Image (tube, rainbow, N blue to C red; front, side, top):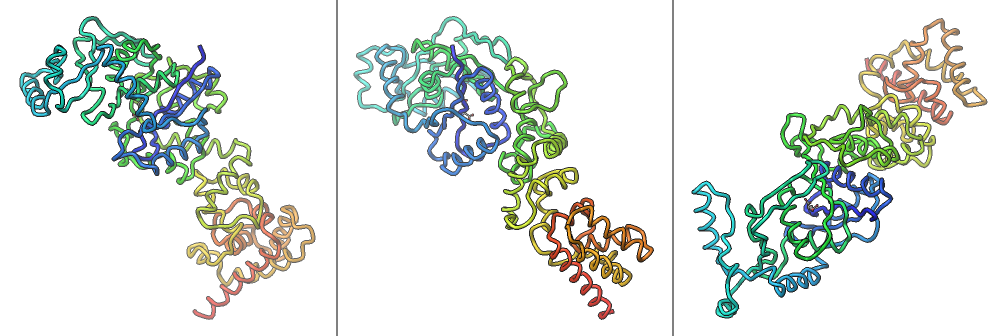
Length: 474
Ligand code: GLU
């Protein structure tokens, strides 16, 4: 049997971390088995489902590299299909029309709750005769699934182990509302069957739906998929992860400068482990992932670990891959990178120095955009009158270099130190502030080598003017 797994988001918002992790696990199940991974958009709640949310889900999935096979399935395009099966179940007497009014159901629920019982439908319409049905003709009705009353539903959840629910615990589920629209649990059953789903991986909030769905699948003589219900994700305070804890949407992590490899690696470990290994490439995940290794307990989000992974991947992934993401961040800043050093060179120079790509883009502006102002603290400290001679000397030496390279630049800096009998810092710091605008940059020779010689010389001129203007003011 070839494996088919699915991710079935309800498009009512962005793709959040929990959803992305569920999608990742489902994707891994399929990829590990050489099977198929399909997407189903559960958009039947028309009030809350939006195209923007659908787009955001696709965007998040693509960014993470969770590719899906086949065109996504939309539940709203399948109402005829659901209606066909509802009619079939009615014809086979596996479902029935229920005319109970909302008032009756409410009163019943209140009574049951007051008596400390579980609220459930009492089955009043379950046994109506054809004559009684005929009498009700024209009255509004819902359609209920005739749930078996005897026996138990048993399934072996890959995460939670054996789960057993007595049918006496389950009431007759509404499968079609008064307006004829099918309900959630019914749609899922028909979809999973039609799509040939062999593995249902989803949040544990659906665990109570599973026995009901199994009963409907059985009534339709449909094969049963395997199930894996994944525990919640908690914030670092132990409460369910939410907006309060910071970024929860996947694209927000992209915006904040994380690499998809880091987020994916972080997500896979958030509730799954393989020994004490922390770093997993995409291929390793596919090779090593097993549903039975998913933790039963909820996992807590840990931003420090994500940061650590992000740094790890910035340093170890091929620079081209990191550069492609970095390009996106420069675009967000409105900095054009066509003219200037290759982004891979910037990645190699800066990867050790930052936690995120957003930071990397922010501190690397000077490679692509003019330095329009100096960091005030750095200027105050290093662009002082004593730096005037140093800057003049190094400017001349740099301007005279015929092969613009880090070695030649380093030679020029040393020559200035010797000529003026000053230490490296006395030359390096003013030069750094002049060319990069601030007091922090990677090694000067390597940094300057990535900037055109004429630009470097011109920036030193501006810094000299700055010192002069300052002198005149005081
Ligand atoms: N649409 C459901 C959700 O977003 C998932 C249902 C399922 O996976 O069966 O929670």
